[in-house]
Image (cartoon, rainbow, N blue to C red; front, top):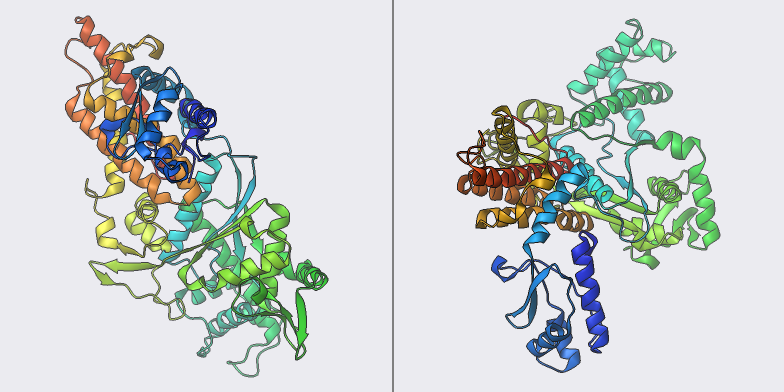
Length: 572
């Protein structure tokens, strides 16, 4: 679990004080593990260390907790230490902690919530989407695009360098077959059961022909006139397939950029693995490691010795390397460029996990340095009824169509507020509703409301003064304190969401922060009567404090939305 002391200097000091007390009192060596109390009235932070020490210490948890409290030297910003329940030690911070928080948020701006790395700064390769380039992205790929990009943003916010990578599967039989499908459509010839179908095939044929002055694709590929309309020379299929793939890849890049997803690397299987000789080099490295063996003329990798359910073929008996050999070469190539590898895969790749981790160990890559997360699929609905999809039959609902219908922010946010283990029901009619019942609009409206409040104050000539002159000590209304406590949580939420790869934690935090601000807005008038014209000094004092509280809360909400790559509008 992410350590909150990474996120706040006061928490870091408190953590150090607890550890010193454990050592000085010869208490069992456990982590303090600071956490938020479930009941807000109990304080700002708590530790369950006494409960975890009790068995080893041979004493009741409350007795251990009392010894901790009796001998603990806390930072002076901690106003109260108490014991609750079976032995929780709770800490309540002095109000000046919250005052300093507002100043820290405003001073940090977009940097509030950004963390120093836990340990050394690492380069983390995050591969996500990587759909085959034989057709447009469907809506399910949108989930991996939004989730992978947000996880990358969270990891970056945790202080590490991230490489966003898309693996372009542009080699092999499927590409030849794709090219063959395009040629046949260009000829007006019938397609077989093995061919790709749908409007995209005809569209690519038309675009390739238009790019070559209207010549037929056979002419473009330098082929003689076919003797049979239904027969495509394999070399022609491969050539047109490589061109068609590049067209599709460009379309995929465009729709992902539209979603706000930018990749640092588009890795070509053909160029990076086949043409470069990386597969042969990897096979040589695996042979040298002693993890391969030959059987019936084929070369096998001993993956079963590393947790896989069976050994995997690297080279077929006819001498052709398998797709798994390319996987191993790609794994080796990424490891040479990274400190840690992260794969985000769909549920249909569940059987892929064990073999990749086994291959990593065979290649000398520490298993703990390769992380593979499996996410559940997306059910596309309209009015509660399933929308059928089939890329081969041409009835797919493309991601670009979904973006046209419901928008980028709605699409991203709906995916990001669901955990990877949850199957997402994406109902086009429901998610498109522009109301406060729609979570993304609820959060965005909070940001727009704060912006409107600040804009109105400025337009009316309210003299809010500099932040350093604002009297923040008067922010003691329950709604104000609730908002302050909520704002303080962002760095810890970022750390936890990054560590758990749980974008939904940040999305739900944004919703809770929005709700907290809405309550504050309803209970605490920001521009108090008499503040605008300066006729009431007390009204000016209160309004200035609340003005800067609003400025800080807007910044925190904007930072949370930015990590989710969702727009924070000033007007709605």
